[in-house]
Length: 609
Image (cartoon, rainbow, N blue to C red; front, side, top):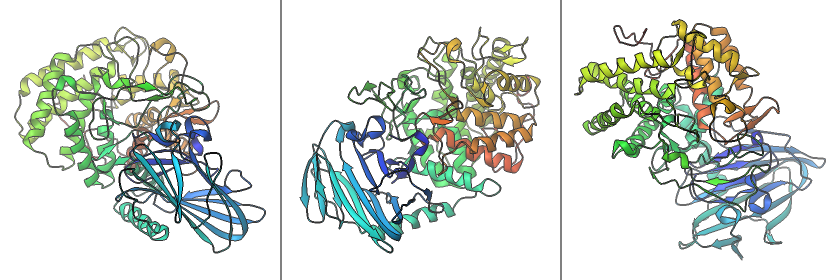
């Protein structure tokens, strides 16, 4: 396995693959993001499945890049014998799932080596492989894979290998296709035609972007990454393509992120709408409405790609874990936690969709009213908080702030759009929550909000107070909170979620700095008028991306490496939102499309109290 930052992403809007600088695809789940992996070397060793194509002499590449604004990866090696390029891509899904690799000779002569280790069910199942005209067929249970290439293939110790030579001008294609084993063999795709189609797809998609200005390139790469994390049939966006990449090397903080979090809803909509991707925003809004439909008391923090609710967590003991970080987990038990902030996130997101011009129907409003009715009776309960803490439930300040957001957005929906609702009751509840948070969640001696009632600890989520409009950036309590977090909850200038020891999150060990939280500090600095510091931090954060512009979840300032699942949607959302916000030189709240000027809300209770 390679360092997390060595991996680049391929995707077909159903699943994603990770390719290392050594030319090995070490992670791929088929047919969907949350399906069992057929390449799981990322979490063990090559024996768990991978596909390597590289010079026989080995080593990391000389350079690599995405071709323009696409998801077509070009990896190059300069060897003693010559210069060679491998072009990797996944065509947007047709009738089957394809991974295409074209080896291109640029100069001289290079001996290449291909090694295909197919292991279904997360490295556990070895398929039956047989030669067929033009390649091989591998079958095990419900899964079948065809590898087609003009290069002769050989079986060696349950591995399919090939050694071949490329010269200047040669283009040698490899096409791997997955299909259910009970279907006929899928049609053979021409790799060159598929390459042209894939480039055309991504170029056309990127051409729709409204991103401009100083950070346009970084913003567009993050947009492409979010598109690649989209499950096209439903419009859902997964948090990451991986499971169990550690937040602490060798530790147990290893989670499955191949699901869709409701907490991402507002960021998703704001990022997509700001960049002009209205259809994608609509698809996400529709996914959101389908996922949360039902009894409001049964709202979950996350769902499967299609809205599946049962995400049973279990371990895979046959995998040793990334750099020995175990256990390896599939599923996510946090789906069963009570996290009250998600009610606020959902209602904030749906209000933003309305502000952004996405049409809605009466059924959607009825659902929102039902969600608020539940929150009215639940907002005073302790919960697990947005960080999914597995320790005791507490009265987290962020959860209370987001309950305020829920009532605020519903009140304004009635006032601004004429929708039906008990607005007087909702206003009273909004004001009561605001007063409660300011009385019990604020440490007057230190002039900062705190993580939870009856606590002295800080939490990065407090940086969102101006973003959601609970208090303006001009309020001294906001400035005090930003300063306290900058002083006490950072490492090398980057933000921790919380201090893991005092916070008692139910787990041993520590973690790296959380990249999304550091972007929240960018926005908070901007909100309180410290623009030059915000820009400096934003550009420092961009420097933490890998060579092809990707972020994982966390960063280890000591080891200077990425940590956690990758690529992480929650780290890429704020690249778009913060970058556009800094570009316009206007602070934007979560209830405002980034491209629109801020609209004052005179007389709105809680803005200054």
